[in-house]
Length: 615
Image 1 (spheres, rainbow, N blue to C red):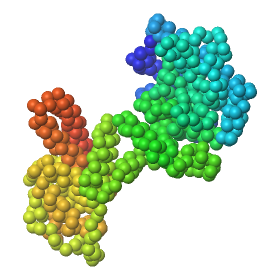
Image 2: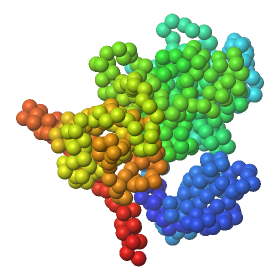
Image 3: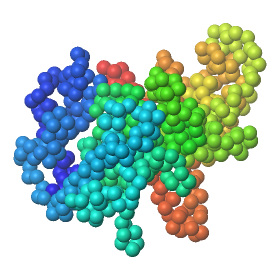
Image 4: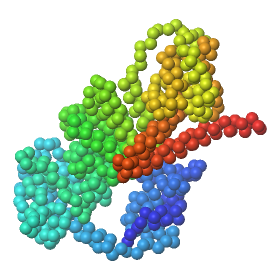
C-alpha cells in the first residue's frame, strides 16, 4: 500500500491525540495542553505534554516526541501497518489499496534481509573459530571487551573470494550480489567483496542487518582500511546512521545525540558508557541524516577529530545544515584534542574527559566564526574583506529569514569588533548630571541630526533609527558597517549617518546618558511606538530592537542596488540576469514584509496607549 503524507495528515486530523494517549496514560489538563508523568521513562514530576492543536506529544525530560502514529508504534509496540489500520478504523478512513510494485519491493527487501541475517551469523561464527584467531587477537589489543563484541555483532570474513556461496548455499548468487556482499565483473564472474576483514553489521532503525562494514587487520598499500557495502535495495548510506537503533532509545534518557566520524568511534564510546552516539557511513552528513538527528533532539552534538580533516568534516556538516536551520533546531560542535580520536582520548584520559567535552560544546555560530576567522592570515584590508565575504555567503544560504537576519547581525557585529577595534579615547572627567563631555560636535552636524530626527529627511523608521542612535550612541560603532552600507545606497540618509559617526567619536558614552541638550547636542524625541525611543525601556531590550531596525534599513537599499545592477547586465547575460532578478525580487518581498511587520509590531503599544487614554 502507498501511505502518502496527505493521507497521514488527514488521519491525524480525524484523531484526537490526547484521547488515544489517555487510554494508557493519565493526562491532566494544563491550559491548551495536557500533561503527565512521561510513559517513556521514570519520573516523579510531569514533563510529558500533549498538544492536540499541533498534533504532537513531547517529553522535556527524555526527549520522546511524536504524533499519534508514532505513539502507537513506540508506546503500544504495533508495527507501522498495524498502527495505520487501527487508527484508520477509528477515524472511519479506508486504508489505501496495496500497491503491487511496492508490495513486490517489500517482498524483495524481506528476502534480502534473510540473506544478510544469515551472513551475519556466519561472520560471527568465523570470528569465534580458528579462521578468526588473528582477528580476535587484534580486537583484544584494541581493548574490545567480550560483551562489546557480542553487543555490536563483530564477525570475520576469511581471506577467500568464494567463501560466501559455500557458507550460504540456499541463496542464489544473484541475491548475494544484490545485498552487496558479492561483486559481479564485466565477464559475469562473481567474488566476495569482504575478504580478510573484521566485519560489523550495519542495521536499520529497527535493528535489522541491511549492510556491512569491514576493517583490515593491518594496513596495506592500495587497500582501503575500511570498506562498506555499496548502496543496495536494502542500504542507502545517505539515509542511514550507524547505531541509530541503539542510540535513539538512549538519547531519550540523555536528551542528547552525539555524531562521531566512524563506527569504531561509536563502539569505543559505547564501551565507555556513552551510548547515544551515531556515525555516518563513509560520507559527510547528508540532509536526510540531519533530519533524522533533529527528529531525536533539537541540537545534535558533532564530535569530530581535532585535526584539520576533522574540522573540515565538521564544516561540511555545518554547510549542509545552514539552509535547514529552524527555530530550536541547530548543531553543536565538540573539538577533540589534536591527534586524538574518541578511543585515544578515553584510553589516555578516561571517560570523564570525553564527557566533559560533550557537556561544553561550541555553538554552530561560534564554530563558523572561528573557522572562517582562522582559515587564513588577516593582515591586510583585502584579507579582512575576504573574511566578511565568506561569512555573508554562509549567511545567505540560511532559508529561515529570521534566523538569517540574526546570524547576519551577530556575525557582522563580531566582524566589526575584530576589524575595527575601538579607538583609544582620551580620559575625561566624571559625568555630572546628564552629561559633561566637551562640546565638539559641529553645528552643521547637530542641525543635520536634529532635522533627521524630526523627519525632515524621511519620515518613519529612518528618523526613528537616527533618533535611537542619538539616544544610544554606544551602538553607533557596533552598527557602523551597516550604517556605511546604508549611506552608500541611500544618499538621503548619508548626511545624518556622517553626523552620527562624528557623534560617536565626540561623545563619551560611559555615563547614564551621553546626550545633553544643554551642551548643544540634539535631544532625541520620546516616541512610544518604538521600544528604543520609549522612556524606561531596559537598555538590552532597546539595543535589540534598534539592531533589528538598522539591519532592515540597510538590507533593502543594498538589495535594490543589486537589482539595478542585475537589470543593467540583462543584454549581456539574459538567462543569468533573469534568474538573479527572480532571487532578488523574492528577497525584497521578504524584507518588505518584515518592514511592514516591524511597523505593525511597534505601532501596537502606541495604539493601546491611545485606547487607554480615551477610556
